[in-house]
Image (cartoon, rainbow, N blue to C red; front, side):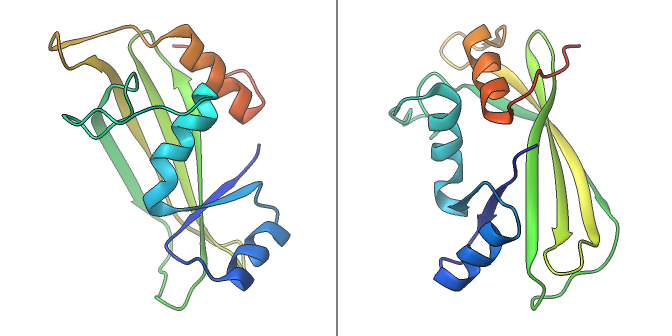
Length: 146
């Protein structure tokens, strides 16, 4: 599994530290959604002004869970891992794991369910096959289906 680090810090030493620790890449948090879409779709897309989501990437956050595992402080360097597992007919699940960069200690883990949604029609849609294929290419593995 490849890990993509998300952070608010753009300090060069911090970036190289994450890459040296094994991260496959690094994104600033405010660029993360756009970059994930580009990675999944393989092209640049415009944002829909109604939803602020990239055009064609239409989903609703349906559920979120987060489980505390151990405390973290502002001085801790944390790594957030995110991956897709599983994909349903009209939804997909992101799983998250937050660990301490230095010790590897698990800080929190969770998941969120996204439902593919057509805002213009006001109804759920099937997750497009090319999106699932793009997720699998990005993760370099087959994603379980439900």
